[in-house]
Length: 332
Image (cartoon, rainbow, N blue to C red; front, top):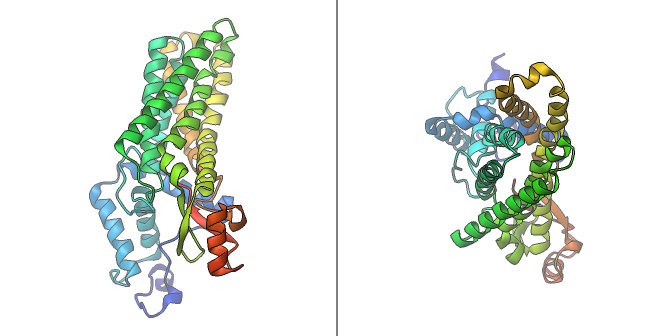
């Protein structure tokens, strides 16, 4: 029993030691990625204290150096890695702001999505909740950007204003067009606005990568150069992932609400509708946040043959056919 619970403290036996620099589950499969993101998007992690975060970081760091406390168990190490990966940026190692962490996606997203679905009929309500949602999204996008690509405060401001404006234009225009449409059609306006804004917000927030390229590496982690094509591939995957997270809640709940409103008892408790939609969105997001994050590997790849001619030729001249794929962090 002691052998299964305690890790060997003999740093000279690398075969007995965990590699805490990589996720616990195989990231080449959807199932492995889903387990990983279900683990680190656990909303309970968003309330970890600074001490808990620093303790987790310290244990992970010390273990990599072979300096972990005697008797440290494998489960303690995996838990420390879970806490550490939920709060520290994978590229820079910096502690992320709480609201921008993926562990805050469920509590933050459920409130905003529920309110967008409930309060969609008046212009002031649409403006406020779309603004609130895009403010939240902008912070999440900035927090989970590829840290190797710098972005200025001016570019952040432009991205925020452009995405918020696109969401408002989409929502208000569609609200106007659907005034005479069936009630169910009008309930889909928030989803279309959110999807449109995601298509603007994420590329704008990561425009430096589009303009100057994203750093690509070989399988051993050696930097090979910067690629705009890799950046576009990574950003497009993130956009699709983000939109997929909202589909069940924002597309399924309108149907449920219209059916429930056929019942007199449900119409009589109008005060509970916002609470019901918020709770339902939370239930969906618990699974859809890790699902969306898992659609594509975070360590994305692109064939050398599909890179820009200059970078492709440079890699071929240095390594011949030894490198067929390059890798990059697509962000979340």
